[in-house]
Length: 111
Length: 217
Image (cartoon, rainbow over all chains, first blue to last red; front, side, top):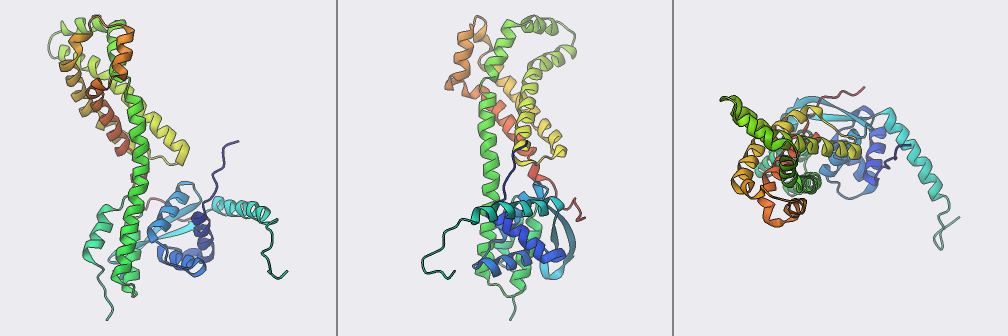
């Protein structure tokens, strides 16, 4: 059986952001989505590096939009999750849920 | 008042110094955010981190290329001399030199460069194969450029080898070849081979493919 490559934390979050954003997923909304849930500033360069890795693994597809003046004449690059990407997310959720199950409660935490 | 032009130097650096295939889209995203009210400091921070991340990824690829090229080419000059002494190489060279010009020159060049070229090309293919197994990323269209890059450096290698050492190896033993392949003194003889392989790996790098070729299904 070929070795399975696991998703990194940022890759996982980017994939989840792609699912939430649907067909409007490009760099800016992906970064905003991550900032909303993770907090702090997100470097767009690291998001693109993660997207490039995911694209190389076949978990994400991309396509160029039209260039617009408010972007200095540069086109948006839209990203979408593939079936393999979705499968990878489900698999990761299964593994993580299993691992989280026996996490001890913090002292004073309500049941 | 809303600013519409990001810092020119940062924008230029972003366009020219960011390796990878997403740099235009990234520059567009930063431009868009800047026009939506982000500060020049934010833009600079994002640009510098994007360049740093891109260069770090490039360095990781190049570092593995440097190590592989050094290991692959270390024994090549010694192997070349060994082949020349212990195979039919010497007789073949003598026969080729007796041919009429330009066949003698072409044959001499082919015999001198051919084996080295094949070994360096084999190195390139092995490296790209290993890289593919690791990253699942390949770009066959870059391969011919990588292969062609090795030719001028190998011609230089051959000239250097003949000028420096050929005369001293007429009575060499296997131990001498081994010492030759390990001795730092002979670093110069493998430098052009090393550079040839390194350059070809750099030129054939898969991630330097153009963006925008795939469509969202």
